[in-house]
Length: 243
Image (cartoon, rainbow, N blue to C red; front, top):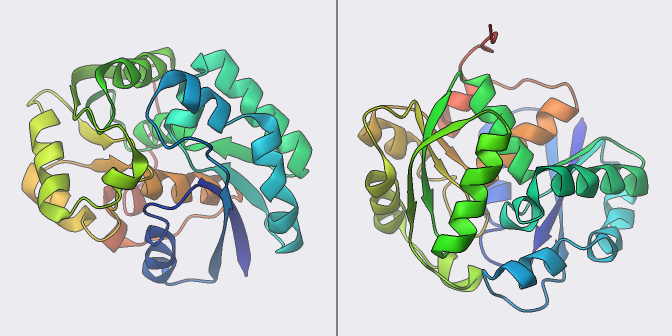
């Protein structure tokens, strides 16, 4: 049994994780601990506080006791708002505190795009324009070209958590461009685990979503590869060797 730990902010789309665990269909256990978010707002100052070391540290002990082999900060915006170097420091601190390999959803997107060979991506963000722009900048810092950026301007994670499949599909379609190798939907508050097959069928290309890449990143840290077609191209394609 491989146990993976996740620090998830508040309550929005955490039910994606048991769904993903079921779709993995293997000896994988996903343990999730909720962190304190303070104010629920997609605002830069709030998001920086959301990923503060003391807030993340509060949940680490529970995951360690659960036997987690790797830990991921399951919040995209709570990582990239610190910039590339700041997000790296956030992850290093988390790894030191937890005593195990650690990462965040922000880095998961970069690594997942590399895994499927997506050099150019379109981004469909639920965030306001300024926050969405910071994510695009983070991707570029990681060597991923952003062909288009669409932002829905939603303020709270709670609201995003109520979106249904039609809204998720509309977000992805609006973001997509013909020259994009993949479409990215970067919000762990967004329910996407049940929609991945339809998203990829409708767009005709890989779609990377926040909770999906978060779990994949934890598996990567634990040196596990799982074939799970129901979770999209990221979980069925062979690794791409960058040249």
